[in-house]
Picture 1 (cartoon, helix red, strand yellow):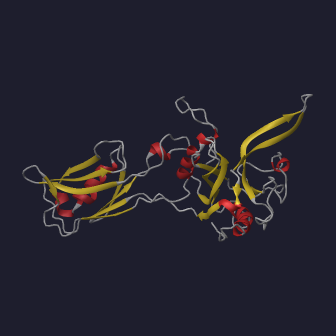
Picture 2 (cartoon, rainbow, N blue to C red):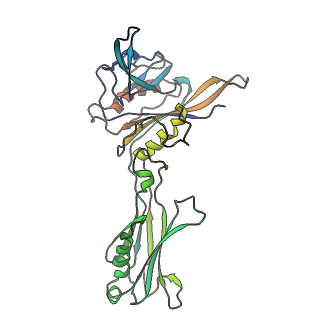
Length: 354
């Protein structure tokens, strides 16, 4: 069986070009006056622009097309330039009878993990060492947990005002250049918030896959025997409340990782060369995307003499949310073509919105 293949098509925040109309040909939409870079359109089985409202009775197969950032010149035998065209990218053929899922995912923001310590009732003792230890759970490569520990010895002022945790340790955390959390504080709380990991959130050419900081935090004190113990000293509340992290949907980091994962399907297999020779990425840093996802099957003649087999395919369309404004946007144009066609398929898929 063939491996599962995903195709990702990425749009830009633009309106549809005036030349991209129903039944327009590839020659028209690939011309310099046709599709723009990042423009998306649905095509019928003859690769003509699908008329909004067409059903499976009009075309049993569709393609989704993206205008790339590459152009090429065509010259005749005399060496005369006759045309400049844009390279077009196509999804795999989407056969209506073999569509299994048709769904949308609107953009949702990511959120870093937040852990809040409340230290109501703490009676700090001057000269006692207090600490916050952060144990990170997202570094899977380490055989043992990676930790960072922040320590202060309470002064008389700390003992009187609880600032041993809510000021002194928070300041020490934020002064650490290699910290993986930020600290904020109030009279009786310390709030730790995960920091973006620079190795995977700096740009579209980052090598590492997107992950977020995940951690457990502990507030401790050192007793007279030099042993680290849970906070004592008459404390009535010593509770950590943790939320997140939330990876969100349609963030530029996740779309970048999807795009990188499919590069092998278009021939980028040598990643040992440095720098890696690769096409320009279509994802835009800091952009936010809505997703249209089509899960479908494809029949093919197996090379093992076992006849016709079936493999699963996935077509993902990423469009900047509210691209080009609510009055004219790529998502609306695409769904005006896709919704009626999908509704007419054997799966009778409900209309989707993003």
